[in-house]
Image (cartoon, rainbow, N blue to C red; front, top):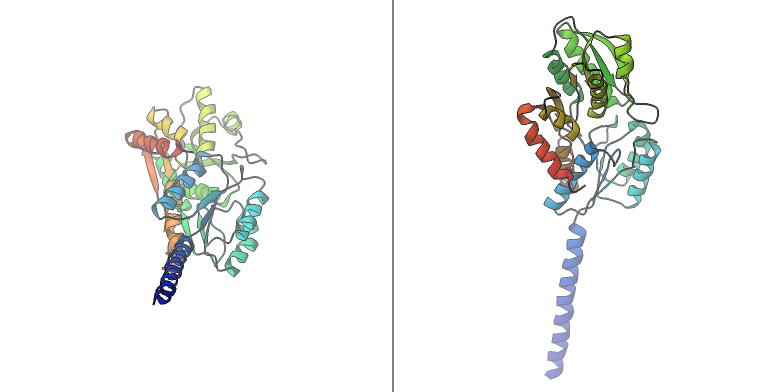
Length: 316
């Protein structure tokens, strides 16, 4: 009898150990692994996207990470990161492509491995993407053009400062259409980045050759701030509208140096991107295009926006 009890006790112990071990393995396996690959790591904009993604990792108990090259250039650095991440076999990829056409061959490998790919901020001409989460850039440009036009008169001349990134091209074209629709002349379109991807000052040259300029739209805030510096140094008062809503731009609005600007919602891009990547992993239907929206920042709401940005970036 005693022998039977010993055998029964041993079997029970093994059974409990197996259940506990199995549960542990199940839990570990069930914690999703999502990797976010961004364009670069050292700018406020991308740090804000990262902050949104990391908040979602915490909220949804996800084993995620955010990686990015230090700079957008050379683009091959981001491609190499993509290849390395693929070896780690994540369950989903969230990706902001610097050069979409270069990334597609690697993304096809993700598809072969049944890894859903969601784009944030920028997208690629690739039918196999799971979703795009980001700004409607032509609409942002249109709103920026309308905002700038509200500060000007028909017949005034403006300049548009952009870049080679398709995002900037779409914004510039949106702004151009809105400005010309109300009789404002677009006198110049300039590139605001040099070959190394650094912001270059084009405003000095613009003012020298066209002193009649009455307004500026720059396709991101770094270029807008560069233009604003030149304008201030010359003692001029020319309205400048940018995009993105980074801290320095919002500070200029709060202090009255600028009237208003258009802000994207990069924090939401990161958060909503992770939220929808989790849906894709679980097999839940994911909306193909998710507009993260824009905000018009004025003196009335600049303080609130500034507090939010400083709070989320203090950890970066």
